[in-house]
Every structure is written in structure tokens, then in C-alpha cells.
Image 1 (spheres, rainbow, N blue to C red):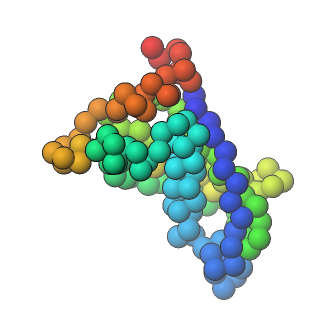
Image 2 (image 1 turned 30 degrees about the vertical axis):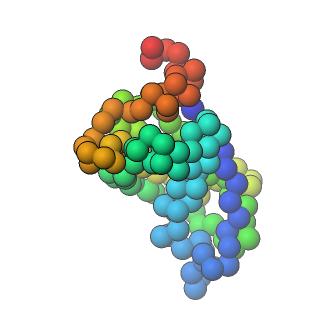
Length: 139
């Protein structure tokens, strides 16, 4: 299983009238977690698009809200890939406060699309080769 953590500080412009992190910003935090997880694996989304001609559109997004986060809190976005991708990839996200309290959790499912044919394709080897060491039991 692959696990990555990214820190994000709640900015004032991201809060609502109650001072909570506005609920619509969580998908953006998930995206930051996904992009940074991929980058740490050595796979940049930009390279997938420009070099490999592969895009990864979102198929579904699920979230649950546990407790609010507030302006200036430093949050940890944990990004987890529980299974080696095949035709799709699912990123599970957990957002925590500095004290370890869970704020939010969810998942984002994406597929792989060949940008030249606009057809879905299996997970590319450039990604699988980086992830395989984390899933020895699935080989």
C-alpha cells in the first residue's frame, strides 16, 4: 500500500462566515495530495500529459465531514493508494489536524485516457513501475 502525506495550512480566503474551512475546498486539498504523492513517486501529472499523452479525469468523488478545520490550522492530507491500479486508480484521502484529529475523509476515482484517441486505457507502465514495490503481495 502506498501512503503519502502533504501539509497544507488553511488560508483565510478558504474559510466561510463561521471561520470553518469551506466544504468546497476539500476536493482541492485532495488534488494537492494526489499531485504531491505522484511527484514523490517520480511521476508528474504534467509529464503524463505532455510526454505520455495520458490524462486522468475524475470519475467519482466521495467525502465525509467529521469536524471543522479553521483558519491558519496546519492540516495533513494523507493520500493512500490501497490497490495497484489496473483500469482505474482510487486515491483515498484523510485530512488531519495537528493534534491527530480526523477532519475529513474521502476517495477520488480516476481513469486513464489516451489523449490522442480519447479512449480509456489501462494504467500506464510509467506509473505501475513506480508503484509495484509497494504492492508485492499483488504481483
